[in-house]
Length: 234
Image (cartoon, rainbow, N blue to C red; front, top):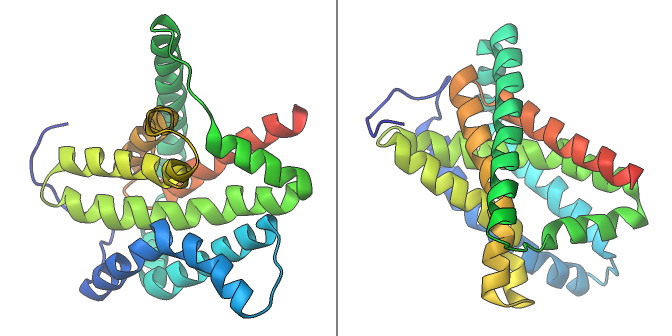
């Protein structure tokens, strides 16, 4: 990945989309998850963790659609179907190759990594598998890829491709583990972020390869769907 300036991906974001997106990003990343339980309590709503999780993703999807609907529709119109299919297949192969290599390295170094986020999802899925599957397989990829790849990756990549990859790979991992810093020691949480690195690489590469945000969205959906399929078998 050469550290050179490069053209924007797909149709690109308007100034209004970039400004509104970066204003909303902290709410998606941290604030909404923190404020939602308090808001429900103030309204006298006794929501379960599953219901709060569903509310979290529905609110995020609505906000992402409100801010980025033009970008998403422009990207969809510009999408070349076979290029998208090719990028998703190659991105999927890259993801699993990266996972295999990472697991091999961790095994050789005898490093044990906790799966805090997966454990949380599994616990919520026991209450209602299909609601959690809907949130994780459909809603989460749309929100995460639009914000992480469409917004953050796309904007930073205009100045530095390497920086775009580094920032979004780390940010993507952070999104999945930050809340566990409040529950577990920092070292174990940082280690728990490592398994998300191959996905961050593959999703960014898939976005570049297909030149449409819908490619990483589709790949993310497939990865999560397979994870839920395995979960159901277990």
